[in-house]
Image (cartoon, rainbow, N blue to C red):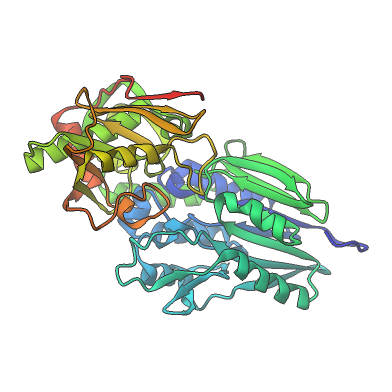
Length: 462
């Protein structure tokens, strides 16, 4: 913080990655109520991306549902997350136009111009304090919602330097980054004189100080709101479950859910299946096995191939939420993978498949260093973190043979990102099946939902 006499303090309220909280009326209304209860004339409300999608209601409304939240909360500033482009840049631009907050982005471009006409930086005055904000988005955001490849993401560090220079030229008292960069927040803090980095993208909470910079990250799902005091940098964590609930917003969301017509029961689960970050990212889990099994089943049924088939789900594609328990509805299964994308089946050689398996231990920018990034069906993997090697891989009970041919069923998303499983590209011979969540529903209706832990993934040295 700048050294000067301060006569008025500023509070930042930081939310991020609320995602499928849009499918839980009490939770999203609790976040809104908590913000409302804390807000006063010295408060600035800040969002750092993935607050439009994903989720069931975001999917069926193409992000419209987020406007209900934004209009209630009336945020001060917001930047873009990667999932805020899930419905294409034109839809995102419409959401921007209809939102009450000021959107900021220093590194997102559309056809070479600032996206949706948003500014790279902005100065807010609170009392006699001038707070400068700028926004950044992960440049590896895939273009799956941008079939014409009109979106581009410039280097965020260079863009940050330009924005900070402009803010300093306007004599701001505090510089605050709205960041959806994940682990690159550390690089941002180490490179520049920034007072606060409000982060997102990584789905775990964080409160730290690095080189004099305060870094916060509320995690995913709208469970946590951070309050940051300026100029001290003191951080207070507010658990949304302990806060007020905006009853009017909760009623609006309940009506949206009722009108969506997704309450058809498709299966019953007697042994609840948890859907936590640990289930997604800490190795084999029941929920991961269910999704991967459904993919393999769908590929075998649709293609009738003689090749051994493997189902693969990237861990980041499984969304957290309440356990699957009792009567499971279509909405419950859509919420697991709430993306309007088909399942892909590719034919691979054994050595290529082995490369894909090895990449399950690579850590993208949105992940923690020890996260595991794959769930599989029809395969068994042994990986040693001590020396960074895939020790063994088998399919159908037999070791993978480099010269043999295999079929791999996986989400289309993996064809468009170079961060996860870069071996998988559109150059492979592929078939497109139905939308992923539709296949989950079909599998649940035909086979049921009763996954178990089978030793499919063994992680030594962890």
